[in-house]
Image (cartoon, rainbow over all chains, first blue to last red; front, side, top):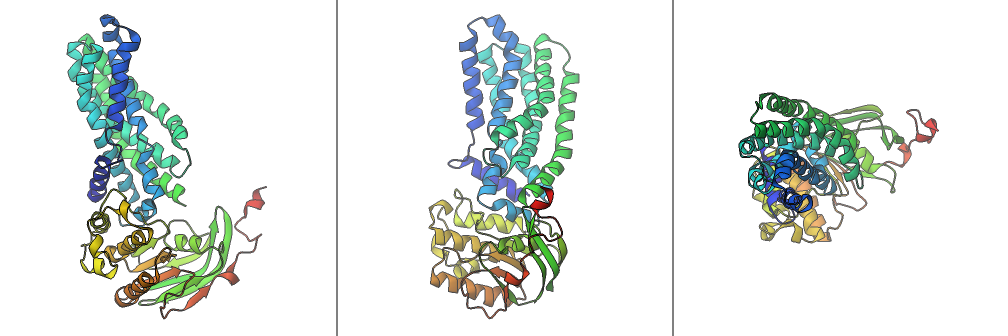
Length: 218
Length: 205
């Protein structure tokens, strides 16, 4: 399974691998928001937690359809399905690889971009922590969505529709944690909920994703 | 080790295509599957490999010994030839033997990116995967597409002298003569009747 992770990471950083795609999208959105909203610092401070989380979520969504589609097109997926790797492990590693190439860079870059939105100074650490805890859930839920729609032509739209409702709890608790951090309140509850969502999706969704893959490979 | 198939029926997209198929392949033997386009060769091989369920009958061979190779080679264009093979070796927990590069004439191509290979070279790389993963039961779907005569002979030699010689099994769907001393199975007599039980699409209309 480590071999699969290593290969996916190597593919992501090579030409045409799409590493940085989500990060670039995140950067563009966050740079454009103050231009669109106007220079009112107080307003930006108010919307910063929500905007950062929405942008991170959309950036993660952007590269989801590549998770299985590329392996499906070149025929690797049936070969992986007949290999000794359990398909659940394949799905898990795909989710981990997606997080390492999108969620992790987003988490690391977010504090720097919070500065552009005049994020309240107490919120930086919570932005980082909430993204670190929450983005793995985005990747794993997205992997499940990608498994459901693998093999469909132009399945990206359908996948977005399937995945976005599942992203809502992550978004709510993630942005809430940052907001509470900005207001100097306790962030324990939203962070615990976020951690619960992430752990739950990593415990259950690899099985759901592999079941979906098996059906789609027939 | 034998591959035993009895009374197998397979379906494509819910419609039965083959039924009443029974054959045995002993260790060290190959079976060449023939039949016109659309008869169900690919469907049969995918079913044997476990990628889709059979609608009737049994397939019996030791678990976790099968490998499947289809028209698509599962090659990553951004990885080199060695990296591609090393990945599959790693996935199967096998070593990457040097002999494979010679057997499939890839020695000079080792460090080329797979994306820069010609169609025939890619095919050789795809087939070399079979030599790396060390699986005993191979289900090969048109393995010689886009190979030249020399490469076909090379592949047939590998199949005979390496794979079958160590007690492997191969079921091969092909239209050309591989020069293997293997029995042939024509699928035409096993074509499923249009209204066979198991439900064709019309049954739901």
